[in-house]
Image (tube, rainbow, N blue to C red; front, side, top):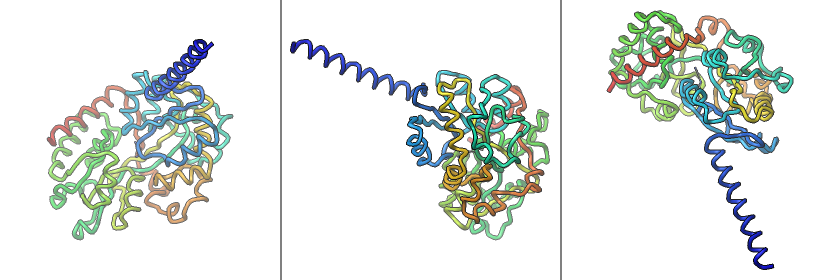
Length: 357
Ligand code: SPD
């Protein structure tokens, strides 16, 4: 009898250990399904307690992974291997993912909170009728600067950045479209220019900015700027807003030559394992109070009209981060320029980074 109990207990122990190992393996490889959900988002782009709240309300366990560029996200999804249920790419990458058949059409009947989104952010050219994507945050690319470190110098344009007085004072965002785009805009070319001569001209002009560049950085730009380690940062508006809440001396401007207007949207990649969970997550993020709480934490601009009423007035009325249509109409949205042209942008950006070394 004792022998039987021992065998029985051993079987239970082995099963528990196997279950534990499988679960850990699944989590590390993002193999969601069942009652888990793997979300792939930009770094610093969600309030941690929002994830806790979703898990509590639905009983679904979230496995959360982050990326720092559209290109890195795309590579990981194209490679397969990791199963993502929800991802948050920007508009030009969504267009590319749709064309490469990497996304599944959404079931709008499972997204009743979609009514909360401002119509201005629906039905955009990269995904007419929002078949594949739902707005998450939006914003501009611009210059965050510290007037106290600039000795009276005014910053209003991209070309101001080439001033010799700014030696070693500029932090650049680590993004190919953003940096090459800044070179293009400074020459009054379009952010979607594919003319190789113009692109090379933009890269050559960026090379001459090298003495003024302190570093090319990711999310750490926020700490560096808030701590006054550099006077200027080229960054996304939401990061600027967060930095400015840490250090009130700073200001943000969208350069006069023009800049980028961008949209990050939630999508369900083809690799999805938990389709219902993915829709539940997207719908949860669209809830007015959830979105308000998330927006206050993340500091980016929300497309959720219903959320605005739960947010501090000074945030919603700040024209630097909720610019009027009159301003956004003058900005350019990145287009999917096709594999070859996107590769050219990436190569030129890499060469530019090498040139600095
Ligand atoms: N730290 C969060 C960054 C999110 C920025 N998304 C902007 C993409 C613009 N193409």
